[in-house]
Amino acid sequence: MTSPLAKAAGPIALVSGVVFAAVDVARLLTADRSLDRIEMMRQVPFIAANALYWVVFIGLVLALVSVYFRLGGRAGGLGAVAFCFALVGTLDMAGNMWFDAFAGPWIADVAPGAILAGGSGMLAVGGLSSYVLFAVGWMVFGIAGWRAHMFPAWIGALFVVAGVLGYNAGLPPYGIPIGLVMAVLGWWIIRTGVPARLTGAP
Image 1: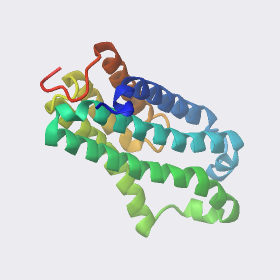
Image 2: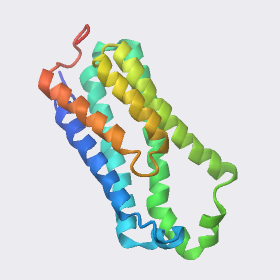
Image 3: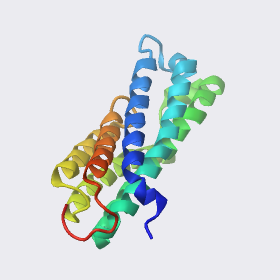
């Protein structure tokens, strides 16, 4: 029996991807570069956009899971590897974005010197891991997903490019590409009607 998530994978991926990209555009528009970093982090529109960015990461994870439920059965072990790499990278970056959205403004109010000091030690390690794993995760998803026949090569190539750009996804507008490519994948699923657990290339 096909799961409801698998059946709705196309619309979920399309909507999640478009909203993800749109929120990153909002982050770009609300980042007032005329202010210093501390003041910018205290602005309500900037705080709201950052909080929404964490929310849309949840949507990106749900889209990834639904796509895997829809297409993973046709990809075997290689498809599972692609899914796991992308999931780990996205969850790690989502944690980073939660910190920026909810802890960052509080730190800017109570200990602005900590913001200006920059990251070091384990904080720097954690931050770097999220950038690297997010980028590598989506690059592997693109390559392995294409090789495993989860989706066409051109979509795989788009995921690789979005993954490279996604190394800077903590800063707008570098999250936009991964959102747009997820939306394209959703559109492809809807257009082709590719069934769950189909064996063979599209």
